[in-house]
Image (cartoon, rainbow, N blue to C red; front, side):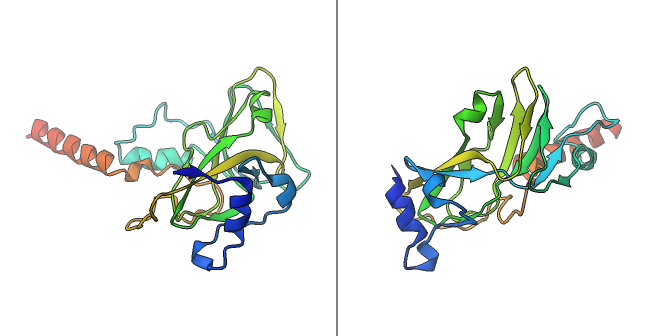
Length: 211
């Protein structure tokens, strides 16, 4: 794999073949957002903070806890000029303002901008990999690991994505769980096949004990 330069990114954004083209919409300021082999991405308008719930845990193998996990987060929208206060130790989901579509010969790596990291704001600490062919908004996992509150405003450049060109074009037979998302989405870890399999195994063992 090779990393795309700024010129390469511009070329992919203007590729004559639509299926080979990289889409980033809206790209409000190409000159400012595309630089040194990466594209800066902006904070969107929708947020999903965690909230207090009666349950003291989330067990990803438990069918009942799937609904508990959903109920542990709420959703709200901010407008331009509004802000969100990220207090130390807080965690929230949001997403890119931009909607992306990657061609099948590109993959992306998403990370927070270092200017925010120096304030204690961590962006996308785990889910950094963007699959070839991905379409949708990208979810941000935002945490304040610093010691003072930080204000976040929709529309500000908060993350960056680097693109890698694959040696051969990926053939997609199964789309990712988060394909096509519009805004931040709930965790879909309950759909992981090994978790479903483990849940069935535990259910069978419990039945054997009761018998």
